Length: 90
Image 1 (cartoon, rainbow, N blue to C red):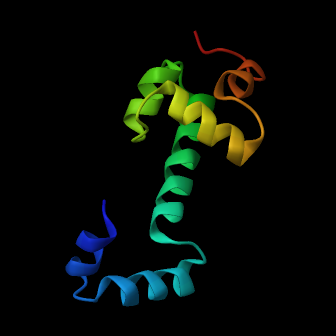
Image 2 (tube, rainbow, N blue to C red; image 1 turned 90 degrees about the horizontal axis):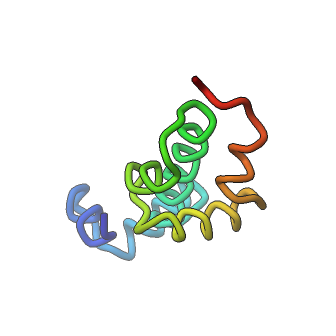
């Protein structure tokens, strides 16, 4: 979602919305959303046997490579390496 749309939903100007959002959540709206998407991807990687590509698509990343880059920057490992550290589900 774009900041313009979010600001319009709560009837604030874009700048005021962004400033208020950051003061409330400690992150810019796009960074906050990326964090939530990465958390959800991590949960799915640990709890399911879905492919990394399907998890990337389900959590709003452009492709598997996009998820892998963002995941590595956030968690310091790749989705495949994280998944390799746990038993696979049958």
